[in-house]
Length: 150
Image 1 (tube, rainbow, N blue to C red):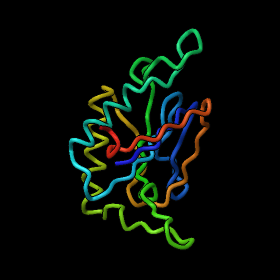
Image 2: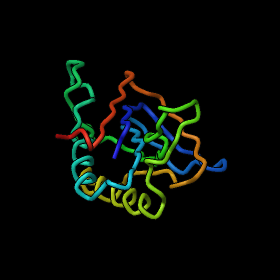
Image 3: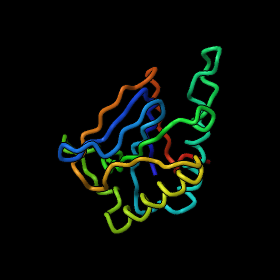
Image 4: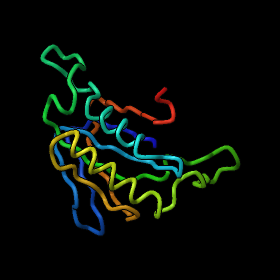
């Protein structure tokens, strides 16, 4: 499981002209899933993201987590995070999990993240053509891959 976490001042997701998610002061998580991902990856990653100290404290030092600031979150499914560009110029997405595997893992990720945060997490729609808009704060962008957790 691979996640791109962006600290945002605001972010939204629009599908077919309708805004389906909208937050202020929090994080936007782009989440890529592969067939080998399991519940352990979800538990580790959601806890890691919720506790990631990427928000400024009173001294301007990144020392606070999403939990500390009571921030909001949007999670968007992003199969292109597992693109392979080794051959040619057209990326291959063969490593990305197919919907029958990815959808349940994505939904479990969102549920576990809500449990970790103690609040509702907004989402895009799996497989939809989404327009994601954000104002990256910092900019702060962190990439975490559960295969690199050891």
